[in-house]
Length: 426
Image (tube, rainbow, N blue to C red):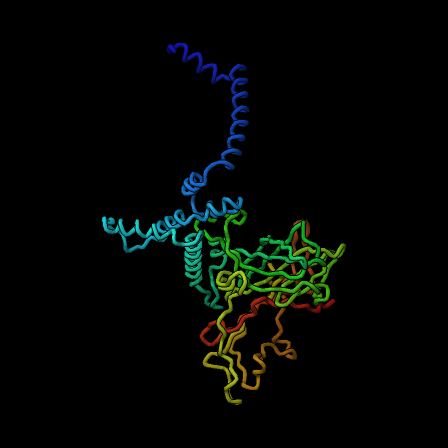
């Protein structure tokens, strides 16, 4: 083709003549038909060896996700040779920085031969286990800075943002059917985290038998892109709840839209006044041990914090628990987001007689001494929210309590913040 003819062809293509557009339209639709038919044929008829070769070029996140597409892809994505190479690349020893010798290369090739001795998926499990351990270590390191006043982690909000840690509930019906829900909203308080779940398509409350609360952490923290992204997560069981007799639980408050029931320990369930259906689920979890309980457990066994032995039963009756500076109790009273009171009580002590059945009695405010009474600021009430409505129950408050020893270390907290029903003056 001569240069002048080539220029004319270019100008026609750029200007988009009707002939060119029509031809392009026909080609586009014919290509779509061909590509769809080819793709359907290729997925069904492509040899497994070719698919494994293609899968070997995918990153670990995509490889885990593609294993959920079908049974065939699940087995193909478990290929040991793919995962042992990813394991070696991701967790390469820092000590081996020099160039491998021929002897080392031979040893490596022999070790690859032993890959086939393992069952399918072995190296995938090893990779994910190692990855989870590295995420746990990174999260533990991020919690080292603490607040001077309460000795609780000072970077809770930042750690949640970076790690992508969230909370999931699994609702189980009596028939065995499960409903899995990620949290809808959360607010980070000074000493706790308030988590909400709400949805337009809740299962009927009368069909539910149990609710399990889990911490849900992205396995690949470095590739976490935001709370709305779908990514592989591991679950850590925090608490199990029985919902079979929910309506017989203690109702702690209501307004014109919802009734709120408390399921121990510390779970709030809101039911609509109109039809009795589920409106929301709320949990207020104390910051002390929050990350450990949310990442260190398994999907069946919760992580248990080490017991504190400050208050034991083998002290003489005359013993006074006081120390040089006494104990401190920090109390936050809020409505899940709005604060009404933040106060610290210093120099608390108790005698041996005040310890009974694992409980310790501290006197902080004398009811008969009005000078010790503290005012609550603002409109007191428990704030709730759903997809379509929000409100405030005036008779309820949330209380976060943290007891510190004389070294200002937390020795007791209310793991799930107490929700109290109060009498307000008219």
